[in-house]
Image 1 (spheres, helix red, strand yellow):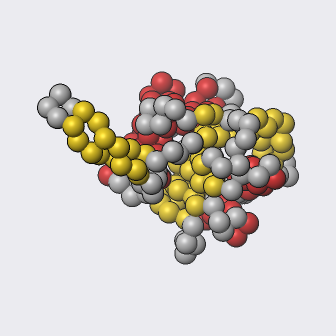
Image 2: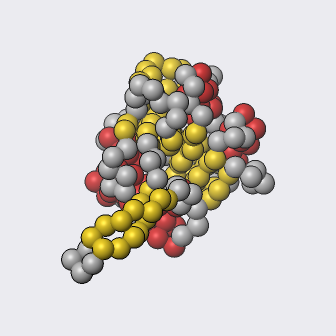
Length: 211
């Protein structure tokens, strides 16, 4: 997919773990642990442009100058409910991040997003947002979530997902060319029911043991 704001994160560990996430025989516990691990690996990649500042510390040996992340105030925003499954993995790397929530579900007949919940930290205009959903299928929910964030003044947004369909990438990148999209895998297509092929099934059902 030739969109400058779309990146597939290529790493052997991500590919390895994504294989078992896709596998129908992976049990719920293993599925959740693997999603956590891939989210953490992806967070390592998508935060590599965070600026650094120099500070002075004292080691057990001497004083020295070194660097820390410069004043980044990060907000993680999972799209409910499946996005919740990726939050813990990212918090392991960014424990100070705040967590907002956007409630959107896809109507299985119209395939359009339906909004039911929106809560983010106050005074978030200058914070860096990472929007999270395991799948970018039609793109409708992710586009609607970014629309809502922009409506309240959020400017710095990245979107991360486990897998994406070409149709969703096209729709999202054309709707929000200023938002960087990071995926662990780009799949073949959507089927007639709007599910990603080969995909991983319904991420929410597999995370929470529901149908």
